[in-house]
Image (cartoon, rainbow, N blue to C red; front, side, top):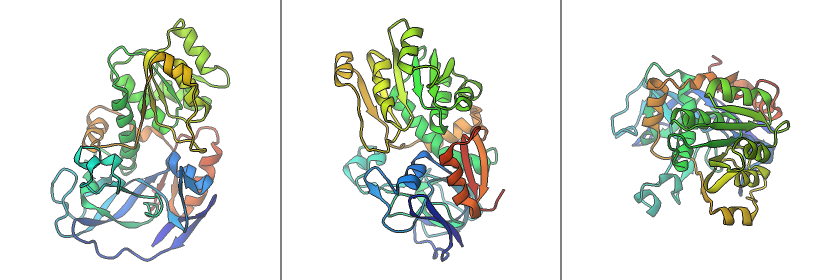
Length: 353
């Protein structure tokens, strides 16, 4: 079967690799139908690492995905506790916690000390035609959700977890730094929560515009034309906003986020920095008495995001701007890191549809 494997920074190759063996108990074999390219994938593609986790041998990337079950092992029960069957369409949570450590026992599987994650070295990911996944990580999706939509449930879950951390309330004022797919999904959920006004900033004009037309924010600006700190100070008459969510690549934007928050405000940091450093002015955060939350993936969200996609009319397919077959995954990544005009979300479909 085909798999897209990263050998070194910017060196992705389309390889022929062996088919997976039969699934063990509590596992299933799926045929992958769609894989989203995430910002964290792009970090690994560009740097050969993410944070302090380096790729030490060829690695199959990809963790936003869905598929069709081809074979089930014994005792294959999904994330809802129901038996899985051949032919079911599923979205897959890419994180496999141990379910036994202190953090798992306390309801924080996203902080599991033994967690395995698809596409994070040394665990191969979903940029392949077939793969074995844990049954408990599978969530059946209704026909109302497309194959691409099933893959988009993972970033929607990340966004939902970030909004949960922000404890957003009706009429809270919110600013979002970064209008990539995660930032746009966060913006959409915050608008749906009843927060107002909601402001957004991005480096690309088409993504700032998407924040207005797709997510429905009050106003959005490009950072080149409007300094975020000065702009928020002007529109709030010096008060700042209740909540700032940083969803960019987390360099100077974290320091900006602290300046934009009001006294006693709340910061949620979602972006992943290339330099693996967090820098902000200590006196700003201290004197404002800011609450700072670091967002780590997600937990217990798939039933909720399936409901959002099917009942709350969150048009997750509407963020997908580019599609590539698996045989051109290397071209998809090369295009994505260059950010040509109009690019928002890149999706890779093994069957080319």
